[in-house]
View 1 (tube, rainbow, N blue to C red):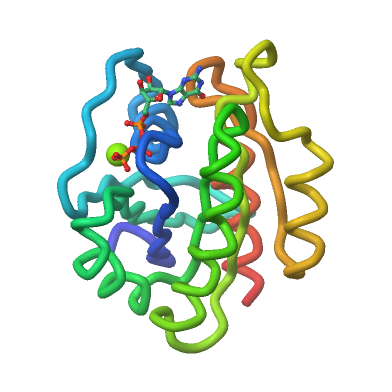
View 2: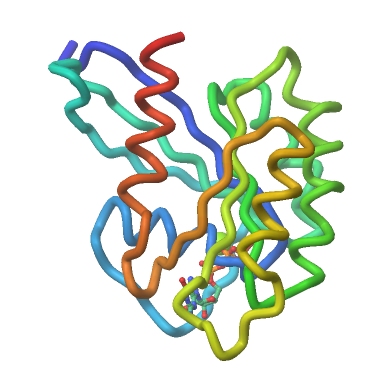
Length: 170
Ligand code: GTP
Ligand code: MG
């Protein structure tokens, strides 16, 4: 075995919030402005070193589109961590986080590590959801919160590194 721990992390949230872009940035350090909607479920892996532990992260990408929901729900259970993503320029995607949280409660099984992510924080001029609103929603649900930009590579590494550290301590 070429690693000490295998962690499965799943990204969920509305269509076009940037789930695939976050993973693409993290694993391949690339970003595309064009939008290619994810079909069903996909994954990428990345091996990282945390406190002298080799961690293999299996990062699951899900389609935000409604028609794939029944497929994507079936993947929640096998994940150790669930990343709930909204787009800070899209109020609707933020309001839907509560819905995604309810789906997690219903389909993920036992209590999972969760984090709420406000993506596209580079787009300040288009921002619809202030940082504080994201923070408040996360606090209310007792979940960690971070804002990211896949485009400008803000907090992408930190997101996965922090999750990995918590999973390692479990
Ligand atoms: P589905 O697969 O349909 O669920 O969407 P998704 O959540 O995977 O979104 P995706 O990563 O495909 O990104 C959607 C669009 O947002 C693309 O045009 C991306 O270029 C853009 N985008 C993603 N992340 C960012 C970001 O951090 N900043 C900005 N400005 N645009 C972004
Ligand atoms: Mg996608």
